[in-house]
Length: 225
Image (tube, rainbow, N blue to C red; front, side):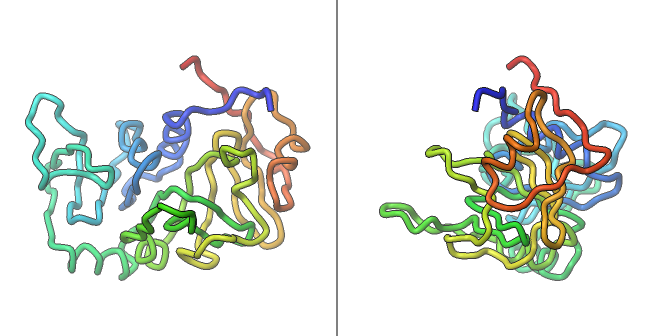
């Protein structure tokens, strides 16, 4: 496909724009971590990390790395005014107890009905690493997924049925890829946005689940990288 795709930072920016004021949000490893850098300044979004921080702020490159103040991607962070630090027991109780409005995670596969596989591909030499993902998808009120639309071999990552071990069944609400934004609904994926120049037919060709275009869909502009 010759269409120019969104960068990882552009995917993160789109997610950040869709997070509501006052939301308590957990950001996973990879693209989700980047979301913190694009949160609108006029919104009060409280970031949670499963290693025990509520009220996480941006890192300070001028300070030495403090391994007690890191995010899910093991990057340095700061504490905002009013932040709290907890142990893992309390942090996971927040995750499991329905106290998070949203979690943003990466994925290996997502099925059209919202099943998520993001912890093990089963390939030789890989190390399964579920972390807190199962707790997050079970407890968060909404689950957003960020990922490339296809694998390195060009195979769809949005599928009829996940072939990898599941993290959660029917848990995903929205998918952000380098090609589109899609909401999961019964029987079809509703396309809310597509990159400039992409057609629904071309998107369907790399998506193994029926797509439908939302009446108010928007064109996603790929910026110069």
